[in-house]
Length: 218
Image (tube, rainbow, N blue to C red; front, side, top):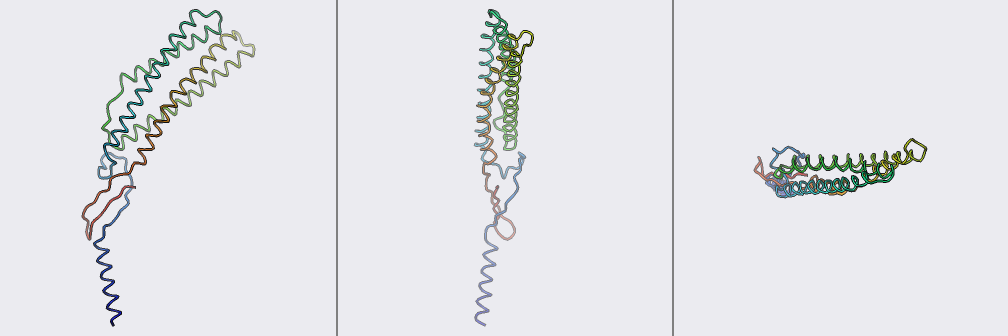
């Protein structure tokens, strides 16, 4: 009888402890800005968003400088070159430089704003920028491939082979230069994106029937 009483008392204590203990619930991650109870710290999100905007601006400035140097140097070679190879190289470089300067100028004039975006928008904006840079890296490889094909063709007896060689060499240089610029920004974007998607959320607590509920974002 005594053993039965001890077991009943122990069972009662365990039941009370279970009723009063905090409850931990794992909830799915939502990227909606309305899910404010599970947002990572706003200061961290804002800081990463500001870093992305600053990185975009630096990238555009570098592209603008690269384009400007190609316009100046290419135009000089185009105007003063003594053979088709040099003139072709200069012409291709100057035209690419002008296009790059235009793209960079439009981006600089229409950039900035939005550092106070919520968690979901910050992830989407960084992912967008990351994917654009990744696509550009692929295009840059394509430019170098086309340039290489033109240089190879120049040695196979095509008409105006020297011009082909000059244009092809310029394409290789343009693709390589832009690849380096895009790669620098892509690596930085990939790092920020990794910080965002692995950022721990806040822990929220509140009263629920039968005890204290604690919500943890995984």
